[in-house]
Length: 75
Image 1 (spheres, one colour):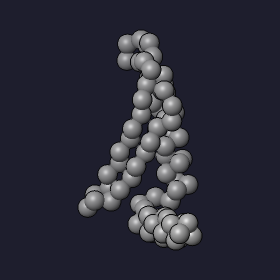
Image 2 (cartoon, rainbow, N blue to C red):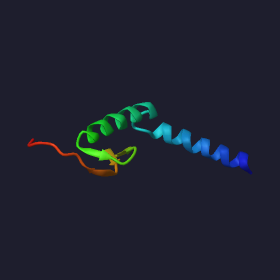
Image 3 (tube, rainbow, N blue to C red):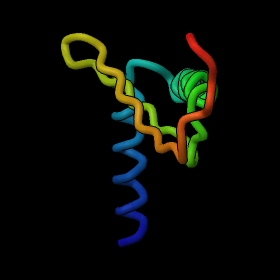
Image 4 (cartoon, rainbow, N blue to C red):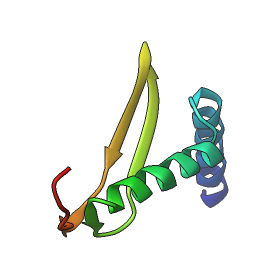
């Protein structure tokens, strides 16, 4: 039964990659850059989640948690 579940998960992974707007590597690079930008303004509480989907147009969803806003001067 375990082999069937593993095979099903691999099939789902392949389908996700086929329909992905960005490759997994590009998505990691984009997430790292977004995290770097957010960390200039916030003390992040962990990694961010970045999701890129094609729904007619490309939809980009970013999820991040922060401990607090960093103090900074007038913009």
